[in-house]
Image (tube, rainbow, N blue to C red; front, side, top):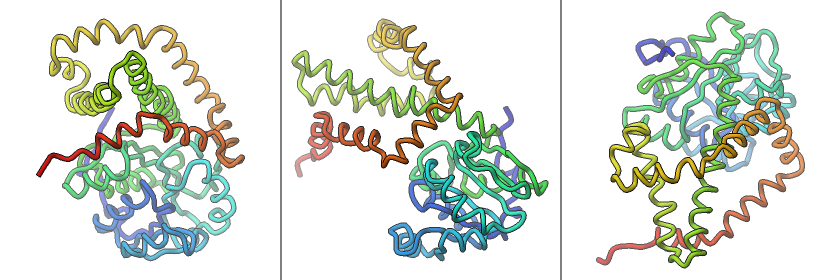
Length: 328
């Protein structure tokens, strides 16, 4: 796979474009700030009048427009609003006002890949997806670095969509780290699978199961917390820096032999079968249907899950340990 860097991009492709960032949250704020600091002259934020996002964007020095006004003004529209909200907002507030030949930029392929948004034929449609949270995107940029990013072009109506996408990724700082080409479908399906089967789904559940097992067996909650949760950062950092094989070289023989003894028993054939089932549900659209149904109903499943997480005893233990301070 070819990797693109700053030398392979030309910021001039977007420097004079009118760019509207829709959403000023986890990704919207860092992306808008990085664009401005990269010399993009006209960056505005689209937000509802009177909302907290609008107030924060103004405090950061951005002009704020309503979504319909921003759609009529912008050459490039960067859609960083929640996936489940994008179809309605696009249809009702953006599509009727879009300029001819405008470009749509997504950070996730869901709405396009599953046909929730069907853009006009004259619009460029591209994906630029930094691989990390917005806080890390901004922090790395300010340090002179960047986050790896994926990019894709779904529709190249102008003949310049590829150059626009690469320039946009570079303006976020990703050209300092590497920009890799993908497709909307590949990015979307791999990301949805990872969120469920590995990163946000499996790892927290594994931590909780380990914590509960130790506490039920009479171990102190504090020791269980430190062993099963705190050390996750250690292994995460080691794997990021060295890879899995390199991580194993950095740990003790006892820890490495323990991984040999236990890993395959936890991630069993049944677990791998369930992973393949999750991937099928992602690819056939069933997961997206469930997501949209929960959103339409006011997020009952999501809200119940959040409440259950807040009520788990591990949270109280974590607050106690995080509040510890060394004596003066």
